[in-house]
Length: 153
Length: 403
Image (cartoon, rainbow over all chains, first blue to last red; front, side):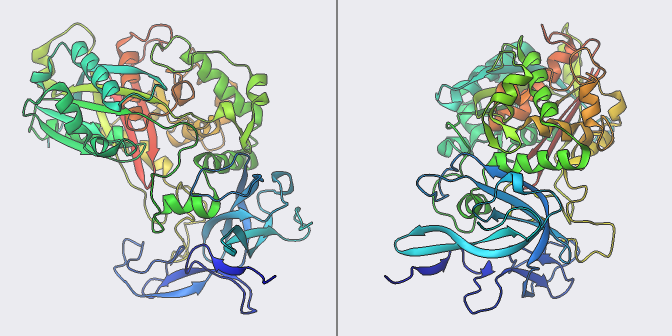
């Protein structure tokens, strides 16, 4: 049986790593003032003192530290596409030091809140969000680094 | 603009909060009629009607001012309808106040009402891949309570808040709401009962997360001169300031429905990821405008979307310093009988949220408290009251009242 096609659940927000490079979130950097934004801005800079509309696409840091975290014990409503039966997942807000921003994402399967602590280091992976019509729809997730709790098994 | 930026609150009215699924117009109409009767005025006296919109009730909800005006009967009154998410009610108050202070009208009616679906708030219908509110559900399954839970966990990590502290907020508010005839939930709970309720988004449990409700609230506002002519027996309550501030860049605290904060990378120093953020600026703008400080406040109505979030507000509206909210709570200072009762109405904990009505309801409660007529949950000698809330997508909301 052929492997399911891997399709980003949203276009242009992250690289999948399918080309062998490590996956990363894609943000924008204002060419005038250096402000970074995720998801990427294409038409305006969020800095009120900057009227630039020229941006370059940048890969954000792949590692950060947990700013806070929680979980979703009950199945979220659509447009979330939940597995059947529903399996709770964790969410983390992760601080990226270089970009000086906090970005959210699900935490990889198999991690519970008991495995997480504020300040833990995590790294970005790309994983299946849901499977539909023979495709794996992909999203970014955070994975605790070894020694920081969690784990893949 | 006049030097005196106060407007008078002549009337306040509410429809009880609950879950009936009837048209939102009914709730708004009942509240409006109560507010008019409270003011001793008729609908034909209103020169301006300011509606707070609801986005889950079709076109009539998007043009709520006109919808309420038609339900009351067309009189030719001028109209405004405004949406600012949870801050819609404050925005509607701000519009009416601006008309009055500009001298464009003497007396105005403000109305907000909502009919809400059951369960988690989901984004409004349709596939909208350019809408962060749609995308956060689709890509992360991030419901509203998960954002509240991120803040709650921060408090635990930074300030040593405990699950019991959060439960105590619920216990306090449940007790406050017992005698409030407009509250949906009027039942005492114990810490054990809160901690035994199902976990929804760790560390927040079912009894600590505000429900979605139907309800309606209304105010009759006027110029001070009109109020003097009107006379009346009750002590005159005034709105001294209305804050409808937006955030300042970079906004470095993660906020619903966003995926990330602004980046502070373009700033050399003074800005950290996850730093002070937007919330503390909301009430401070009201204090500055009204020339009144948090030390003068007798009571506060704040947006306790979760039990833990109420603790954040204690600090954000200046009742105590950062990290001191748990002590304020544990010392009983924010309970009825304490130094500065918070959510004497019972708060969202006892009401659930009827989005466009909620910020107006906060003001109604303050009006009754300042008049001394909040039977069964009165704050003794209340002279100054403040409300605070925050609407999705950068809407601050704080109203300062005094008598």
